[in-house]
Length: 288
Image (cartoon, rainbow, N blue to C red):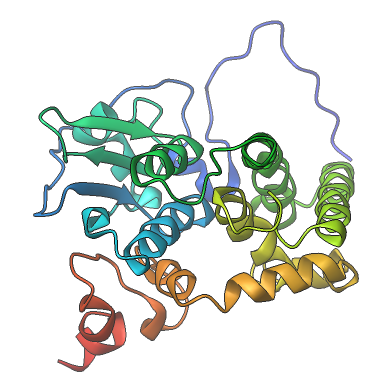
């Protein structure tokens, strides 16, 4: 095993980050000038169909399913592997250069909202849905929402990176983050053994935030064979919960938006109208 001794002062003198080396850098700000497009709806979403992006498209589709016409949205594709998130327009919406980013143009002055948890809270409060107003359900929901914000980096940037994307397999790193990921799955399994949903009896933004990451892992959709590696079938309460959310039509639609991988019929690169799900998925466009 190669031994590495850190220098007294770290300098950026080589690519780092494995599969994401071309877009990783130690500074913020834009790399190029590029204005963001603006569509016809009150809500403008700039995103990609990663777990963090899917949280927001699921939320919007759930709101539309409840009849909230003000939740109509344009979803513009930000290709993160191409560095679209470093364009000047995107950085103006999210100075952290991460998807998803939302511009709410429904009022007299546009409101920028970034970080997926913040977007979910913004939409929940705007439309009065999926976030309880009474205690203790509200506190429980927000606690699980912020649990996801703090925990998922260990699943994604930790386990997922070293198990799938790192240029070499490092036993210590994989063991460290596999252990933490399994601990987190056990946390969820114990909660879901006593409660139908994370916040209580009702489906909330906590479930919408946690499901794309941990539900995806439970159903074997994350990091190639990671589900088998982590023995995810043993978390039977997480499995029950993941299946219930999988079955929701709004969730099925939300998973398709800004998706650029998998079956062409499941990829809707941009969403500007509800009819796009029937006419503008990649399989339909390829057949034209």
